Length: 233
Image 1 (tube, rainbow, N blue to C red):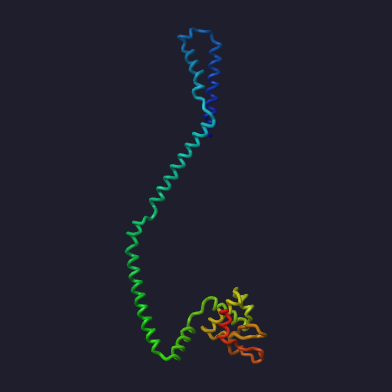
Image 2: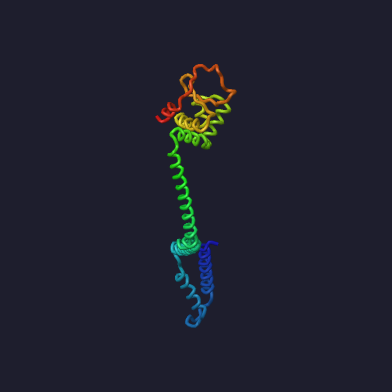
């Protein structure tokens, strides 16, 4: 039950009780007021309602203050529990500092070993003839793994055999400028893709022995250097 309604009912009950006692007292014959206990009880009851009168706004404010104080205490208790469970800087330092130092030392040793190996490879590479270095670079680039987008490009070309730049860019969901740059990287890493022109437009062909048509007249392969210059613009 609402505390306000309960207090209202309590005050109403006391008021009715006082009225009934007063009426019954008035109906009885008058006795000596100085020594009659009923007179003293009636007078105390008549004076009690004025002593316990409460304003509605004050009562609501008091109840609200009580609930607010309780809510604040609950929030403070929750914050204390959260704070007690949080990781502190001291705990982090004690638990992980040594492990982090060990990891950093191990990584530094690995990097030093890699740096030394690369240094020896660079010195060996510089001692090779220029043509050998160029072929080595080409082989290294050719053996690099294709990215997912490159594999998707090769797969589309394999399925369709020949496709224009526009259609291929649409299927890959990229722009034609981005496609030109991607093709420049693909032709360096694999020999399965060939670029050519048809009616002054760029096309891509999947290279295979079964797909060499001699009837394609107005077609010329696109030079890699020219294509890379176009893609850089």
